[in-house]
Amino acid sequence: MESQRISAVHRGKKLKIVLLLTSSYFAIQLAGGILAGSLALIADAGHMLTDVAGLLLSLLAIGFTRKPATPQKTYGFYRMEILATLTNSVVLISISFYIIYEAYQRIFHPQEVQGILVILIASVGLVVNLVSLRLLSHSSLHEHKGGHENLNIKSASLEVFSDTLGSAAVMVTAIIIIYTGFYLADPIASIAISLFILPRTWSLMKKSVHILMEGVPPNISHDEVKKAIMQIKGVTGIFELHIWSITSGMDALSAHVVIIDPSKSLAILKEINSIVEKKFGISNITIQIETYHPEADRF
Image 1 (tube, rainbow, N blue to C red):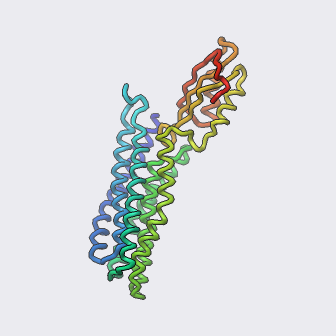
Image 2 (image 1 turned 120 degrees about the horizontal axis):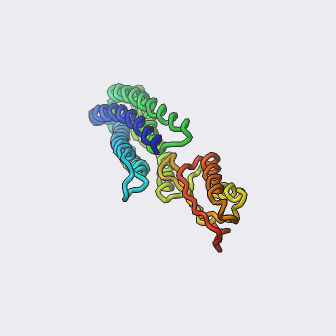
Image 3 (image 1 turned 180 degrees about the vertical axis):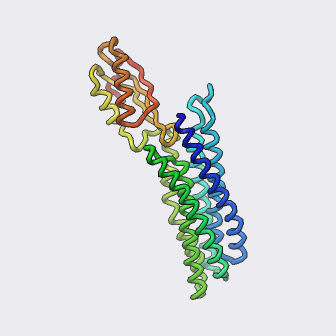
């Protein structure tokens, strides 16, 4: 768990820099979108606002994860990262649907857009987003090298990635408007940006819910874990096998294991812990040794 706290400090520094960049640009983008009459730019600003809120939540979550466990919160506050990810996903989906609705209205009532102003602001946004994405991607890569994926960082990266694409799309839209006067390109681009990010956000939200529901981590097979434990000499059964994630990258396991010879329980317990940690990467292990149980063959 100490390594988790060190990683949290590292992630926090990167998130603070990204937060400063995105919050500064959000104000410029929103004002520019209103002045230029560009829904695509305002849509991108809406996603940028989600980034700002999401990054604030992420920093709050990281602050909580650094707090020690308490008698009431025996695992500490690691789940705050997952709650922040879930909140970010819900807000981003809501913003996307709102932008789609507004764009639909503009298709029937096109508005004039100042292409030059839009392209200037979008260019600044593209640079800001690329720098932010670079910072978050480096942090995400660091997490992967550690053998796990941090959903909190992935959530923030996804939001910044969507804004990077959004800025690029807005620039293309502005060029089309400048040279053709086709103002419908603005709402069409807004819808395209929103539709692109929806399935990815939905996938991230599902992962968050899966962790909160204490589902088995996707990279671990319940059957394989059971099989590995059952192959240990002296083990005759296993029941109440539970595998779940405390937070992304921190998995836990608990089980009741039936053995033949109680005098060898300590040796068997050590072997179980060693196999589960080395083969499946689970370090939070709780094993109850039993000599008999009628449900030993059940899950």
